[in-house]
Length: 310
Image (cartoon, rainbow, N blue to C red; front, side, top):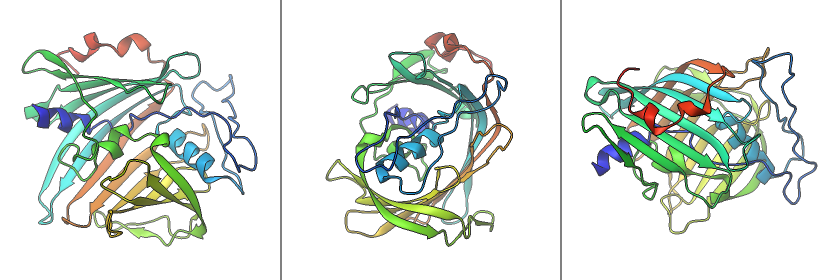
């Protein structure tokens, strides 16, 4: 049961908290949100990175982009492809729903629901998480086990475990917070490009980036640092290098975004994680993305978890 709980928890690759709170020491100017025009209900808010930005502020924008805090709600369909070193592939499908509450709620940051749609052996499993504005308060997370007709609380204590049998850790997928690391600006560089071992495409060659070194506050921990490449166009991280406590590179992560010029939304659509020690990889494909569709907070309840049809 513990393994099943951790497996499903890993689907929540975006359930972490960070509420923007102005500029940190050393920032050139305050971070400012450009609100979407009232005349455009499908549009998203914008925070623009700027030259001279401090590493702390830049990483806050990175989390804001990753967790779609530029919108009022979000839904998508997704697939995980779990590929071992012999190229044998397993697939996990899911639907995801999120409502962003931080603008008006004194307590909640957002609420998020994920439902497994395939394979048949785990179809119908669903997980609900409430994330709070208070960074010291853990998420409340519930798991629906349809075969047992039972809801279980999900622990987030084993953050370095593999999520869904994948090459993401639970922390990378669901529990890492902006406050969990310290940040140092390495510099500004053109990204050299990353060639996918999955589809052979070369991504982001020549894109202007900031490079940030992120160091975990928790010690000892499974990694010693991350080198994070952040796209200057929107502030999302496009590539991470992860190093173990001995300084060896153990993982590469690619994140591909779409930029929707008409609405200013910047969703993630394709993710790749490569474990350099095992030769395994995990590919995430995300589609049918919708923002600001008018989701109701009452949808994000334990009662919804127990639905039999999706």
